[in-house]
Image (cartoon, rainbow, N blue to C red; front, side, top):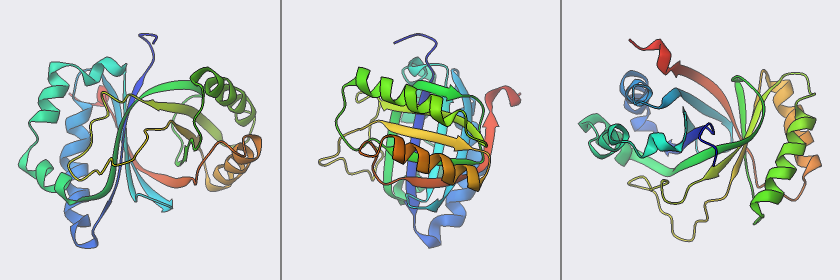
Length: 217
C-alpha cells in the first residue's frame, strides 16, 4: 500500500427516535471535533440517509491507515467519554469499517453521496480495473464531484458495541459524490448500467456538515 493512500473510517447506524436528539447533539458538539483533532485525521463529515439505511453515516478521512494504529487514536478509541459510551450503546444496526481509499476519480466533496456495496467476490486487481474504468465514465457527467472505492481492513475494522458480525463479509464499498440530486440519480444509473452485476442495493445520503482538522486551533 502506498504511504500516500488515504484511509477512511466509515460508521453507519440507525438510532431510536427517542434517542435521536441526544445522539445528534453528541455527534455535533463532541464526537466530530474529537475525532478531527486526532493526529493523522484530515476531516470528519456527517450524512443523513434520504433513501435506504442505516440513517446516519460518518466518514472520517485520514492521511493513511497508519492513523488508526497511533497511540493517540488508540487512546481516543479505548477511553471513550461517558457521553460517547451512552450513544455507542444506543446505536442500532451499526457498521464500522476502517478502509483504504482506492481508485479515486475527481476531487472534493459533494452534497449528495451514494454508497454502493460490492455484492460479489472480486479479485482485487480486477475490481480496481473495473472501478477505475467506471470512474473515467462518471467523471464526464455534469454534477459529478468524486468517486472512490473503500476497501475494508479486517484487522482494523473492529466492531462497535452493538454490531453483530455473524456471517458478515467485509466487502468493498463504492462511493459516488455529486453536487445535486439530478447528478446523483444520473451517475447512479450510469454506474449500475456500466457494471450491472457488481453492486448491491445502494443507500443515498445528503451531507449534514463537515469539519476539517486544519480548521481547529
